[in-house]
Image (cartoon, rainbow, N blue to C red; front, side, top):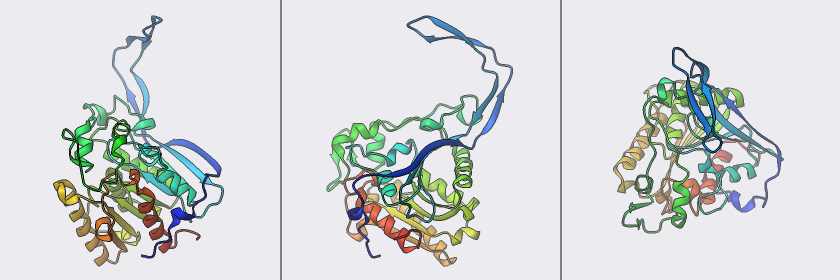
Length: 327
């Protein structure tokens, strides 16, 4: 790969011709036979209202924002999909206040769409829907520190040597996590497919759980995926027959310290196995192992780290190499 050093050529500001937001997907859920209840909507004024839980609600919808740069250089839209327990905020400003990948790709000239997956952030969730009847999970500090490879021990403050993560802003990072459910993946896949139906054929840049779901979306609607960049997916595809998805170029990206955590060591091995089968079937697949390239110190949160634009340059370089931009 030749490196175009795109971040060094970016204009200092963002100039847009349009921006906006919308919800997409989901289905109406009708609730019947439940008793009404009286609630106090404001404890300071004693205003009480009667709420009827029966009726029609929406469940499984997804929120998305779009940003159209003044000068468009991407040949199709680019969609940013976040990971588990997070929202689209992951791609916005980094925990220590630097521009994130949303800023980067807009400035590169991509029509960029940023989503909050079903039941996350501004997408909302329906308490009466089957997928949300169990209690949600909210990751604690120890989990996000150790699971996402910021260091060996949160309690001992053991950060990995040469870490690129802005660890002094750890609490700002930890505040990004929101409750998540474990039975909503099918709803997410449906909503992401609906998003692609609205945007048309697009490039997907997806992280962690979002990347795992992106493989399912690619298998279901390959004609709507121009390319997939899977940033540290925990899994890769569900079936052994690629079908038309073999025509979608795929790039996997992994950071450092994966050998120090069994789950991520396995995830990297799964990616290598899938990539091998994908290429033998005629697909265009490639794995960027950053440490093997001499780029060390990156955790699971590649879009937030001190060298986040250096990594984004590798992604943009790959997209340029596949003819998906106007240089």
